[in-house]
Image 1 (cartoon, each protein chain N blue to C red):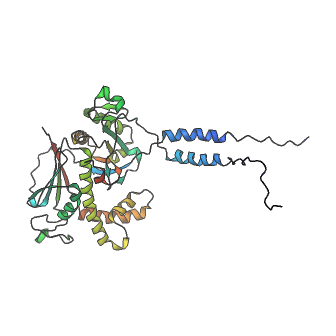
Image 2 (image 1 turned 135 degrees about the vertical axis):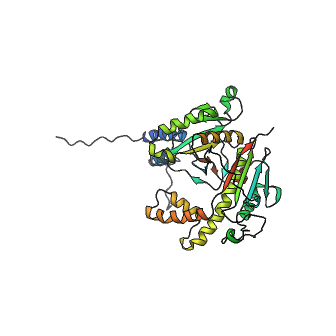
Length: 212
Length: 161
């Protein structure tokens, strides 16, 4: 029997087929955003609650009006504030450490102004927005407040665990990464919890007013 | 007597296109891997605000999406220009959110329900009134974990003055 060589398959149209598929995937691709600011809503509680008395100096009261202007009331001062100055003001308020006796704040590095917050645990940031406030302004304010908390948490995390070589935010990212081994996660968890208890996010949101 | 041969004729040699399929395949694989099929067709404008303190949402199957914004140009004539909520593939009222959350919960395994997060994809031009209404409804059905989905960037730069 004569030896026959197998006929060669023409691959010239392979490029065309690949192009067809490529164009299909190009058109259907949407790079979805899947990151954002995580927040927790307060549960609805119908039971009668006693009003807790909070000293005025421990509240950092922010008010956003319908023209997206920011009004700040804290430490006996009332003023209009720009969003770019908010982070600094919030850090100064949280870090103030004006408490004495049992309320004294050991780790605060602020000015110790007696008219501003006592310690990390007592300091409360309150935000009230108007129904006509634009969403992007609200997100910017939220972002700045989270940034203020993260700044302080980073600082304290690095002071507590200097040999870890990472900041609080990086540690948290590492903790929530599914690829991190579970032994490392367990170690990180305690450290993260410690800082979260030291600097709790006491952030209250009042229901918005109606503007007429 | 020249050392260099004169080119015969003026025609250029053809460029080999043999590696073209390889290049195309490379691109093809990139897009195949990067593609996420959209679950919902957006009927609204969805220009997300910017923030830089973002955390990543992993576990996509544990996220419920609520969209809000102005109806896009195709739907302006029927639905007006006021910001609206979109659930799944249609416009919805605020009062329909509890039913949506219940349906989403029913489709998940029971032990996963506490880990469900609601992602709010709200247009940056929307008013806080709408967002607050959504948040109130979510509180009523005890869906307390929320995520304001944002693009990564400078929050202040994104603000239009």
